[in-house]
Image 1 (cartoon, rainbow, N blue to C red):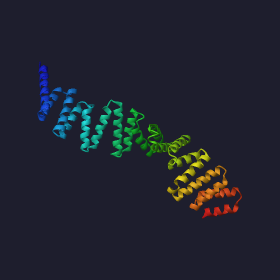
Image 2: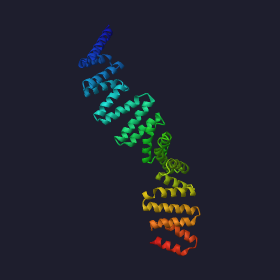
Image 3: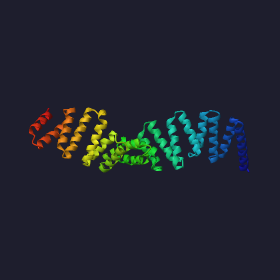
Image 4: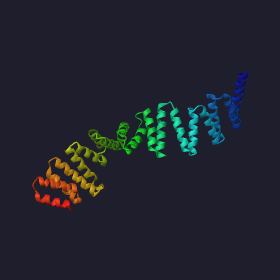
Length: 330
């Protein structure tokens, strides 16, 4: 009989609370909701009541502290109640309580069941940690969580690839960069794709995967034949694989398209590189011309002098070999 009385009391409070809400009698509405919640105990009904109290305090009475209390009491019963999590998260953000805001972000992500939304939320946590708190290593953890749910999620793969790249975690960087280049549209994002293929080439070169590096540099070059880092990477990869004729064409392209933007030291180095390629192609005269051009720009370019001494000694041109040797000594 006592339970019946409690149920009738609760029903009366519920009806009265609804009446107060509809009429805009907010203080009395909160009083009824509070009494009803106490009767409900730690139940889903009480969670909803505490949340409603929070919303009235926040939206109608503009009492942020009382709103917090309502949301927190709801979450004390059910930490997975997302409406209260989202509402409390927003309050912390507006009040610039960023550590508490971050806690709510994590709680929301952990209790969200929809995979697509869960992926997005973990990405947003990583982005906040990286951009607002400058904590890339912690951000990486949440980007990884996002990709664990959706392995091809490009928004998380791109910053995670950057973090791995900067921290020289080459194997992890390669995995992420593969996701990035697969996710970019060749027609719409060709410029970015060119740069990402270059970075993938650089990464695979660091991993001593010369064939893979060459493949990636070629892709970058095909997307933009004037992109200097890709030209340099491709030229270097071609030399490592002893593809001399193509390497020569690449270094010639660099001189044609980028000479004005390069320093004298860089131009001298390019002429030396051309000479080195010509030497390996058994084109000795052209090699000598390239080394001499390097010396016209930088008269102390040691590598060119060494090559010239070597060539003249092989050909028995002892006076030239002697002169270049003395230049080297100087």
